[in-house]
Image (tube, rainbow, N blue to C red; front, top):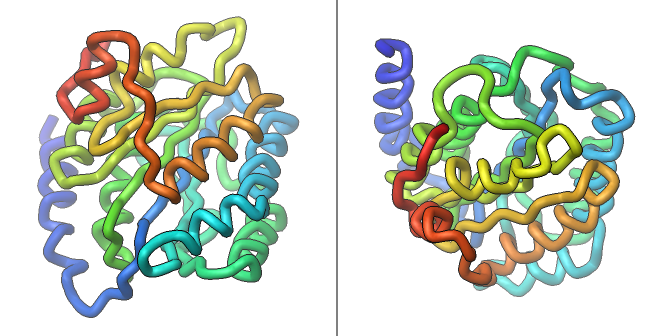
Amino acid sequence: MFRILSLALALALGLSQSAGAQERVDLELILMADGSGSVDHEEFLLQRRGYARALRQPRVVNAIRSGALGRIALTYVEWSGHSLQVPIVPWTLIRSAADVEAFAQQLEKQPRALEGGGTAVGSAILYGVQSLNNNLYEGTRRVIDLSGDGPDKDGVAAAFGRDQAVAQGITVNGLPILSLRRPALDVFFMDNVIGGPGAFSIPAKGFKDFYSAILTKLIREIAGRPAPPPVRAVARGAARGEPGRFP
C-alpha cells in the first residue's frame, strides 16, 4: 500500500515538473500496447503492424492537420507487469505525413521489448499519467490509449489508475481485444479502464480485427470527436470520469 500511495504522490508532483517552456500541441497521445505473455508472436506482429498501418492512413494525417495547431505529440509504449513498461517510440512531434511515416517505421523496426511479466492494467495507466506529466509538450487534450487482451492480474487496480488519470484531467480510452477465453473483456474496460472527458472504448474481435478498431479509435481521438453514449449505466459513470467497480 505504501508503494501505491508513493506512486500516486509522485504522479501528483509531476504536474509541476513539466510546467516550463513546452511546445504546444492539440493532443498528447500515449499509445499503450499489451506486451504480456498472453500475446503470442503472431498477435504481437498484428498489433504492431496494425498501429503502423493505421497511422499511415491519410485520414489520420488529415485529422492531425484539422486541429487548431495542426500538430500532436505521440509516443508508443508496451506494457505488461506492475513495473514493466517500455517506450518503443519516444515522444515525437507529429505534423505531417513524413512525421507519421517515420514514426510507423520505428514501430516496425524495433524488436519486441516484453514477453511476459503479468498483466497490470492499473500500473500501465499510472505510467501513462507520469509520462504525460513529464514530457516536453503541452496539449489542449491529454489521452492514454490502452489496448489489452485481459483484465488485471498484477499491480494496482485498473480503476485506481483510471481515477488518478481522471483527477488530473487526462482521458483514458480502451481497446479491449476479445477472445473465446474473455468474450466480455469490453465490460471490464467500460467499468474499470476508461474515464475522463469524452472517454470511450472500441473492442476488437480478436487480434485480426485490431487494425480496423485502432484506425477508428485514432481518428476519433485525434479529431476529438465525441463518442456515442455507453449503454450500461455503470459505463456511463465511468465515461464521465466517475469511479467504477473493480471486481
